[in-house]
Length: 103
Image (cartoon, rainbow, N blue to C red; front, side, top):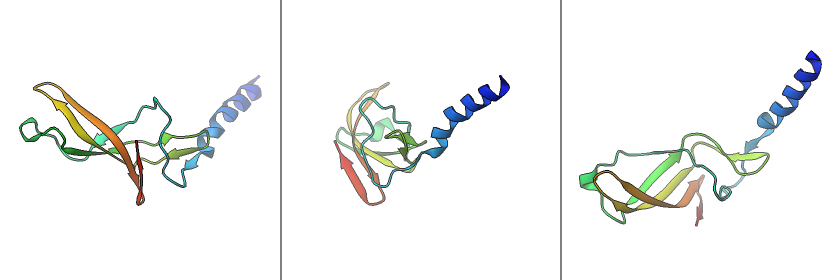
């Protein structure tokens, strides 16, 4: 029974280690959660609608069953709206290794 549970554990874990970075930039699947961190601090008194905002992935993002986008992919967007306690940014572009994908 121990060997069976070890075999099941290894067969589930192997696909995680078999994945590799994507060869080219591709858009993540629709509805994917993108863990990002802003590159610079945003100050409400210095924001303007239409201002370009850049962020980076903070962890890799799966794009298929065997490949992922690495944590250094940049996400570019623009400020859509802001207020005293809210900020809306529309991210429309991914950049990585001189490649760009726009939505």
